Length: 165
Image: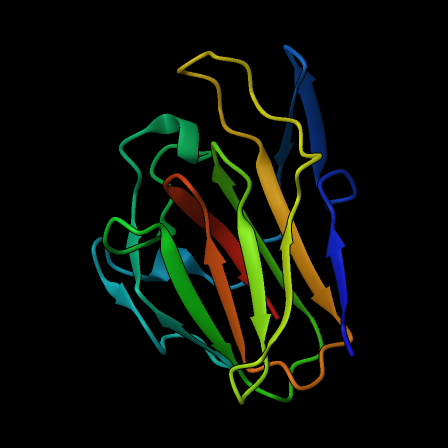
């Protein structure tokens, strides 16, 4: 089986707490999203993972990116949903991104059976400021076995700043 770890405080990096909003900066980069072209469909550009319904871009809304000009991955379409097929040889998975709502992580085995659905309802959300950087959500899977697909969704648009396996 696998272990799910939501880690919003123990990221490798610097914590900056201002206006009662937790911002995590200098998170390890994982896959190099900067190597993707803006508006490039993201599929099999990275070893060990295959994306579906994902596009690379530089967000026009500064709330979704820690550094100006930073390239991220977002879902295509209006359903705020993307999928990531994972190689069965990987043992751990870590994804970090930003959203105004909790991101929902659904973990499936190769037969399509849902192993777990998780959302972090205890996450500290930003105040009503329309200019504040959204908090970083970090979702980790460890001791993975029988996991073939990870589906990520939210009730609002989201970005993925980084992914490592």
